[in-house]
Length: 201
Image (cartoon, rainbow, N blue to C red):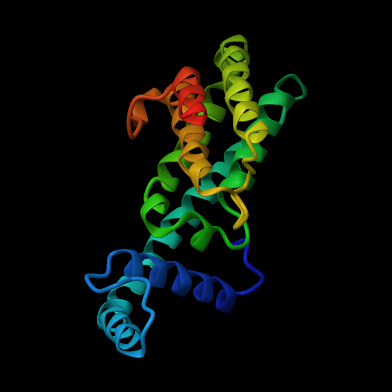
């Protein structure tokens, strides 16, 4: 139950994400300009690749499991009165788990994705209790998202997304947690104002 066209395609993307992570963490020059520097980098990546790839694939399995839970929650809550928030939850899910999401997200950020997905499931489960409150919070999310997209950001992330906007993309997910699923905790203080200030920096 993956968005990839095949299991092999998913493993290929997991491999690329793992290599990116290992290169970023390398103790040798991560931008080699000589054969010797390249060989040193390749040797360091090779030394850790199998264990790191296993960890990435395990994490991907956790993400896909959480995505299935979120998908079931959205599908099971079908109601005309909740169409707007459910459509937003579906859009959030699709922006998190999509073809190529492993490498685009990156292994470090990928560790937060199961929390974001659990936040979707929690939000949908509480929708009927306070739809007015959800609408108020959704307005905040829409404002923050507009700030991000107006600055050139994309949902889902794409390889063309400017590097300076990538942290803001994940601030949007943390903002959603702070509003819709506070008990899951955020990775730091977040608000529409903080997102605005980050974009202006």
